[in-house]
Every structure is written in structure tokens, then in C-alpha cells.
Image (cartoon, helix red, strand yellow):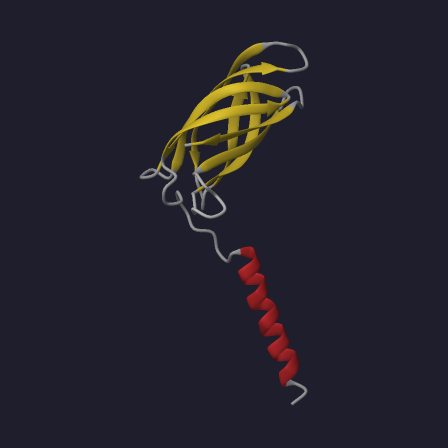
Length: 139
């Protein structure tokens, strides 16, 4: 009987771990998230922009923004294209004021209770200056 208890405990811990982690990620675009989004940039860069999530192709086809670098006052564009979605998450490269940058974020569908509208949010870092920022947006 004592040998069975550790086996049961181990099985329960594994099952709990799968529930907490969400199991295996689903490729693609979450239902209800396709279409255009209005964006607001904050942090080291401020401004506004737009993004388009394309469901059939499971990607963010474009992110464009007009931004100002807070530390210098320089203005320009934020651009990213063709970012693949994996269960609503994305990582990739972009340009900020013509300089290379990296980004990561996610798209979430509205659930009507906690998430009232489909939304997108992302953090990014300029690879040249180290300045970082984020954007959020809604459909």
C-alpha cells in the first residue's frame, strides 16, 4: 500500500503541472481575434498605430506605428510584418526609427467575462540603443 501512494502523488503532480502550464500550445490564431487593431505605444517610445491579425494565415500581417523616442525626441516609424502566431503568441523582429529591434507579445480573444474585447499587447527592445517599450491595442 505504501508503494501505491507515491505513484498516485506523482501522477497527481504531473496532471496538475499540465493544467497549470496549459499543456501543448495550439498553433494559429485564437478564434475572434482576426482583423484590425488600434495601438498605443508607451515606455521608451510613445505614439499610436495599427496592427492586422490575419486568421487564415495564422499571423500578424503588419504592425505600423508613428512613434517618438522619449529620450531624444526623435520621431519615426515602428514596423513589423508577417509575425507567425502560435496559440496567440508571437516573437520576431521589427524596426524602430529604422533601427533593428526584437519583440514578443500575444493576441487574446474576448471571453465576455474577464476580457471584454479582443486585444493585442507586446514588449519590444531596440537592439542598437537598448531602449524598450510596449504597445497595447484593441479591435
